[in-house]
Structures are given as structure tokens and as C-alpha cells.
Image (cartoon, rainbow, N blue to C red; front, side, top):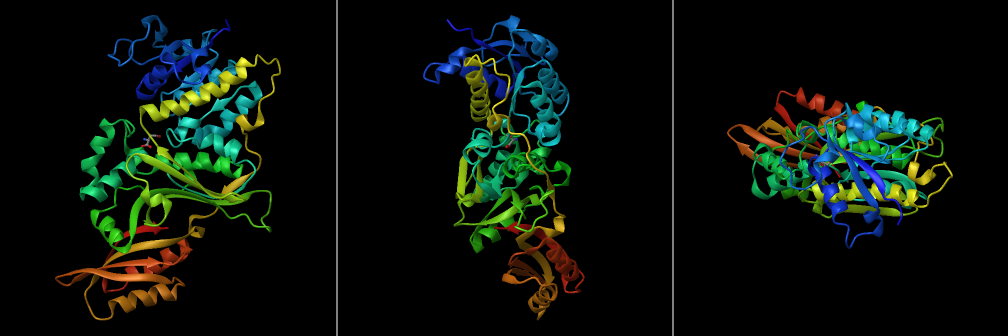
Length: 438
Ligand code: HSE
């Protein structure tokens, strides 16, 4: 009988437990699953009640023991957070062990460091579970879409906020009321601020950018707006205009024939965005994620499925373990890495200034309900080269009016200049919402 492949888990929370359950019950799955054996598990608490039975002697509170155990060939990091996860991943690489990780925060920030260390050591670091939960998106970008020039990625890549926005739309209730449910269901992070404020989606779009466009971008420079300020009335107005509100992460290439090839200009951002009802992303509800990839020559391809939760994330982690197990099972003595699976950066990319981002805008203004106010707003947009697609007065109560504007595509710089001029008009009380529009 062939020797099983020993894996060591770092973390036995929701995802770790999901992974262990798949490995324990291999029947009906790919035969490689039965060739995997969990030989060591790093946990925070040894005696916590768990929904899975595992021999107690596998557990240790010292993660280093998992990495250093000679029977561990693949280290599966599912602890989350930056440290000690980053250090442990690097330690595993130095020990010559391949790593599977769901840790988007570490990969988005230290991906370059980790991938050069892995290439040097001749090991793989696979990250399918880091973006899109159970949706296969990382390997398709690395392998199946490799013949394309990718132009744009637009995604709903945070399950928690999509769950919250979907329930707000359906029930007319505020985000605070539904957040707790999202946490109970295991979608939100222990600290939900990364979900709510858009940081989780920014980590994920940074990772997708690196794979889709071939070069890493600086995670900290991604303009990021979360869902905290999305009000029920914006969702209702959007619905009346034929849109739904989604937290989108978008990355787009500005590469043209005349681009200076030393570095490719990209834009990437995270923002609540109105999505037209006929757009495929508008029908993505609940904890589901979807990633729309536009490339040449493929055109548009959309990846859709459960974006968070124990089972889907564990499915992605196990897929990566199987990829490595498959290579190990060849028993190859050739130490070189499969370049498609290892997927290093192959060119330099950089983010353009946020003011150069081009998109349509949704703006909600609170104005005095006086004659000519819509004309004044229109003039200011016009003076700054911003063309209006629609302008609607939704609600006039007492002396105030609520006015919603949707612009045509403009640069963010133009939109911001127009809005700051509008804000200074004596007839305008406030600009109460500003989102993107697809
Ligand atoms: N908190 C994340 C989400 C989990 O809601 O999408 C998956 O990365």
C-alpha cells in the first residue's frame, strides 16, 4: 500500500473542522482524499468541545510542533490574522513543506515575500480558499484562463456584507440587526470590521489582481468604502430605479498598446455599488459570491457560489491539498515546480491615482425644496464635465427635498470636484450618499 501523505493543520475552528470532516469521510470523493492523513493539529485550546472526534494525541498548543513534525509533509494554515500566521507559513516553507492557506490578509500583504520564499525552497503555497470561499477562482485564473489577456474583474467577494445587504433589501431592516445572524452562521470574521468596512474584499481583490494581471499591487493603496453608511432608503431608491446595492470589488487594467511596459497601470477599488437588475451580479444574494472576469478572447465568464462558511471554504482547502497530494503521488525526484500551480508574478503592475478611476456614480443629496434647485445641481455637474444620466426628486418633506442623481461614466476626480462645488451651493443641505453604479 502506498504511504499516505501526512498533513498538519494549524487551527481547528470552523474551517479546520470542515477540512477534517472531509478527510475523515473519504468515501465517494476523489480517491486521493483517502491518501491524506491528518498527523498533527495545532489548536488554541486542547479540551474545547468539538463537533468532530479526533485522537487527542494529534492536538498540540505549539504550532511549531506541527511544522517541525517529520511526518507532516503539507502544512494547512487556517488560523487567520497576520501574526503568527505569516511567521508560521514562512517557517513551514523553510522546512521544505508546501503550504495551503485560506489567509487572505497575509497573502494580500506578504504574498511577494511568501511566494519568493516558496519558489526558492521549491514548495507550493496554494490559496484557493482565500478568495470566494468554495468558488474555484484562484486555480482558474492561474490555469484555465491563462491564455487570456484579462481586462477587468468585478466581484461580490465578501459573503457577510452580501448577506447583510440582501436581507436589508428583503426585510427593510438596518445592517446592525442582521450582522449578528451572519456571525452566528459563521460567515463573518470574529472581528466583523474587516467585512463591514470592506477590508476583507480589498484583501481579496488585491490577490485576484496579482493573478489576473501578472503583478502584485500595494494592498494599502486600494480605495475602500464599506457598507456602514448604506441606508435602507438608498436600497429602496435604487430598487425604484431598477438597481440593487452590492459591495463590489473591481479591478481594471489601463494597459493600452502605448503603455510603458515597465509597469502596467491598474485601478482597483471596493465600494457599495448600484448594479442594474439585468446585470448578472445583481442576482447574487445571501452569502453567495460571484466574480465576473472579462478577458480577451474569452469575453465574460462568471464564477458563482457560496463565498463563506465552513463547508465551502473546506472544499477549497481540500482541493489545494489534493493538488499537492497529486504531485507527491507521482513520487517525482524532479525538484522543479509546476509553473502554472506555483504562479509567480511575471511583470510589474501599479495602481493609478484614485482620481483616475472611471465609473458611473449614484449621489443622494438633501436640498432645499426651492424652484430651480435641480437646474443648479445639473449646472454644477455640467461645469465639471459630468454628464447626468438621470436625476430624480424622491421625497419632499417640509422644506427639504431628497434628490438622487446617477451620472454617466466619469473619472472620480471629476465627480469629486463637481460634488464639492454642489456641496457649497446655499440650496444644498448635504450630500448624504455617494456610491458607484454599474
Ligand atoms: N468573512 C468572509 C466573508 C469569509 O464574509 O466573505 C470568507 O473569506
